[in-house]
Image (cartoon, rainbow, N blue to C red; front, side):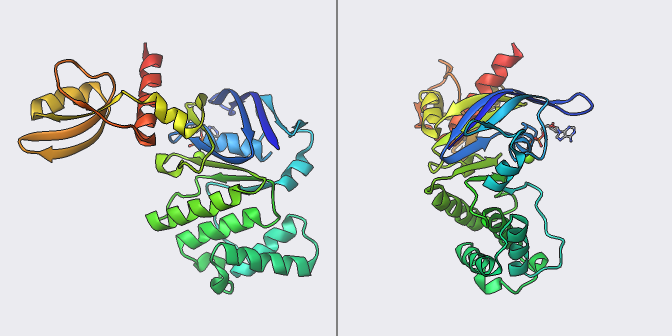
Length: 296
Ligand code: ADP
Ligand code: MG
């Protein structure tokens, strides 16, 4: 299975260009779409699930244009929108049953089995009789992912699913998704949090101001930051100067000054040691380079 995005543009009524010539291939596994707020992530996802049409360009799923095969595509796709909320007065299990019916599962028996199975797999079975709108934030998110998965979609699209979750719930959620990723599905996860893009993503892209600025694996992105991340002990004065010039990743008070980590080309005036980059360093390095390049 493969999603091909070709030369995709989206200009909103009013003239704002939210997506600018996006070209992207997405294959089976977990795909992480990373970008700051306003980058265009939700716009791209709404187009992929056929809720919105692009201004130009096309999306092909296994060679089929999603605009021509909307019905079929919608059956293949499970979607958790960013602003997913429950207002309906339904119990958790009723809510999933409703989602299953909407997805075209007509057999009541089959639905009952599937609803129980999903409640189990997202850890909500014991809350099956609780009203959906009375669940905690994290539980609502899990019920949200359950409704997206209920009809066994082959493409799963989740938009900022970890927003509002505490760190423990965040980890649990990521594990749940990566478990699913082992099957023959495409999972697209959007986020503005670097930590959500873990090694479980076998593909990723960076979106900034509507443009794709990186496409590859997380490891390849980290490689690009090698030799560009530094640790140094600096005085208050030096710190002030460095702060103007470089993105500072961390500062720890140390003796009379600071121990800092920064990203960029080391100035010869200070002594610093190389730091092995992680994905967060790489993100800062990449965005910083791109942004200063664009400013020229
Ligand atoms: P992200 O999900 O990455 O935060 P969005 O896709 O929601 O980004 O938004 C991208 C840009 O498009 C933002 O600047 C946003 O203000 C703008 N935008 C989003 N929806 C609309 C809309 N319906 N009309 C006009 N502009 C919009
Ligand atoms: Mg969004």
